Image 1 (tube, rainbow, N blue to C red):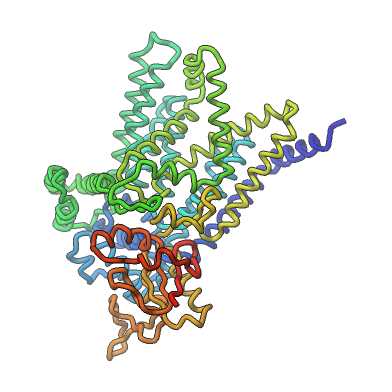
Image 2 (cartoon, rainbow, N blue to C red):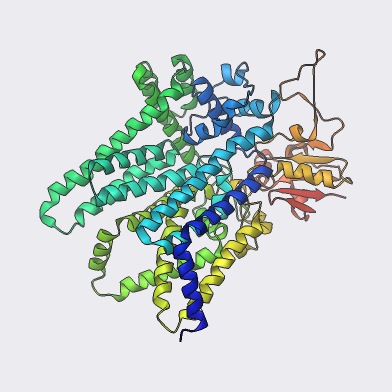
Length: 617
């Protein structure tokens, strides 16, 4: 007679097999609800001020003068709903007419100053990104189920839909979720081509590579990485007598698909530059590529720009050059109490460790340890690895890509947040799910069956519970290894903690605390505090003063503040965590005390984990 444990496991397994679609739909619905709730409360983060007006202008004007350093796909999705909202765009202001890439002023004017409803723009531009995350979740589930079965598919989807990092970037208009989605799809297309190198899979691979390029420029790393994997596929094939033929099929096919993918990118950029004059594009090139190291590229691009058919391709190369120059240039970074304008090699390893749920870290470490142990235990380790690679190309490619992308990020000179390694998460979800299901099924036949099931159930409850507990502040999520987001200020700043997402929540906080009759605010982000705290100004004829000066804050609790103003003498002050920590650098550079007088104080409130409120007396 079966024990209660075996009957329970049997019933759960049968329910999962027969209702797998319903379970997947519930998880995706939960993701949508969590993402929507988080999204609705977030104010504009820094990058959205550039991306949203850029996406609107691409579709509305066919002009790519704003934000060329990022490819257009996600911005197009965000800009699509805005085309139906009868918005006013500041195309009569210098940020559009004469500035070189006046994306920031154009963004602040578009959202806040010319009379549009900023919160409505934010909501409708973010919604397509969230819907992309949901659609991709369904596609991820379908791919995993076809390849590895229902158990792996459901566990992968569980990891994906309840990841705070995925949720955080699924509800923002940035390129990071796009990179995560389309890089993964490109790798899947690559594996299909390796398994069946036919014409259909060749086209699919070219589309996958092209789609990744128009999602985020870091996807350019797919070309050298997959090129190396192709060489591995050729050399590790079982029949060594057909080496030349394999080179032709696999390496030639990959090179051909890569070339065609650039063709797709070229075509996609055409409508984005259709109405962009050569003079504007030349000004953009010359004003954006000023570093002596890239002047040669700038001269080449302005020459090619005279050839009409190359215009869209020139814009793509310009953006690619800009973003790699940005990575090489560095940024002011706060890490473990230190600040530099370069980078820390330990930044991403530590950030990954404290921004990933502990339950997933435990499973990941167990999977790695058991996997390595099994390979070492067997004789002829190299032969076994070769055989495994031949029959599991997708798994190996996903794992190697995650390691490759992570190491490139560690070696780079830009430490701005977990978003820069977000594409490694989906491969990790899949590989951990595959191994977890496999080992759990093996243990189910041993005396460790009950123990392993209980431990796994507790880990999954911990994983899901930590996400629900973090709602709605997913951008500032940190795990229990550092005591949660409450202790983030001791370790990190910028987009992993504070990207400007909590300005609206600060306004709600001051409204709920009438004792605050004046508060100084030093805010880091894409929002405009005066838009939420102050009244709008109108001229003598009753027309809105459509500029940054168009606000009357005389009767507001809000007072704009910056560290260089000196020591604040009022009672309440609110400071974005990024400004508070990065001030360690700027105060030394400027020779000012900065915010030293606040560092030993305990804030009376932390708004969403990113804005610290102090009561000075």
